Length: 487
Image 1 (cartoon, rainbow, N blue to C red):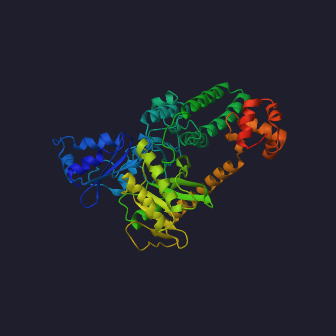
Image 2 (cartoon, one colour):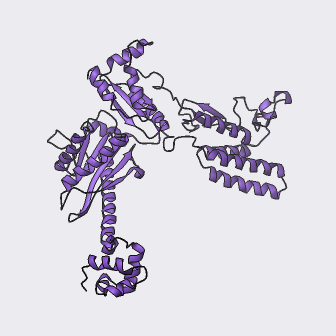
Image 3 (cartoon, rainbow, N blue to C red):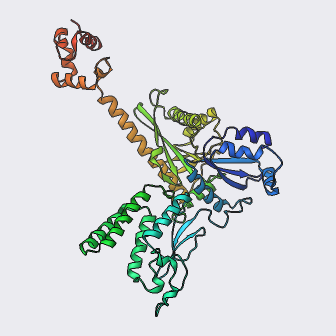
């Protein structure tokens, strides 16, 4: 792709946060970055040629294609950038290939554990909590931990046989910022209780921790240990204050805990240029062509995000026509995404075979989004169909990539059925009286409760109907005309 084509593509990038991946002529990912505005950040690389750093000039000269992944927030973009760099190991990303950019809180594996801030996560048996993308909030959390939990932060040797002389006591212990295990000022059990309290707070379990401290506070008050009770009371208040803040990104704090193998397998099996970080799954549901509904479900990092699900009542298709219903659903879905600059998926999954895939592809072509990879999953043989390939792709039934697509397909099917049932039940549960101007649900309910049925209402005389409280002659006339009542 030449420079003009790149600039034309960049002008279409959204003015929203996300991650951009730069590729060379061989399709290799050579640089990954994050941005508050994808359009502004990426275009800045091509505004001039006089780069201060030769490395940056070399990077720009090798760019032949750019991919983007939209995120909902800056924090999510930061975490995603870090993970993708570790996965792809781009040549021009120097800082984040080997180390963490975002800090963790480390609880060391010792008899009296220390609290340490680190950017390197090691397999050393320690407890790591994070990463924290809001450094200011992390600092406030550490101040709270220092004041109320008083755990040691230094690497001073602990004296196993006898405590040192008083001259060796550090200033932190004197100020009450450390329990002083190095001078045997506390037992290991009491110290570990404080450690367990801090871990609960760092894990976002402030309510559980507050309940634990409340019980200790009540017990201290019963023992007339009012100073200790007051300390616990102040700790509880501080916990509630800090717990209201979002200290780390939920669901993204444990990189090793998330299994990425299904995403990697899909990327390999479908020859995708990007990891399918976000997958949109589509399905159609109806009853003999009535109340047809199209739906989309969204999986992010291989996990369903039902807050992003959408349903569409099909408007342009009559009778049974799943193919054109699928085309309408995709057209409406991605037209809305373009208009509101919502994130686009790295993979679209269609429930069906090659015909459903062709109609879905027509929708993307009409919107200029044909570059988004697509796959159709046929249920009978669990075969995968992709555009421009006649033969299906067959994966083993225990293949992690296939299992992920099956989860997307099954969730889309479930959501389509429930959405269709809601529409159908609403349609058949609605009285035609509600379509008459001036008759709301409450008044219709009153009429049906009084006369029993619409047939009974249809047999009423005009005057009798007009005498009903809240109806009157004008509304009675409308009801008569609507129900085709003759005098």
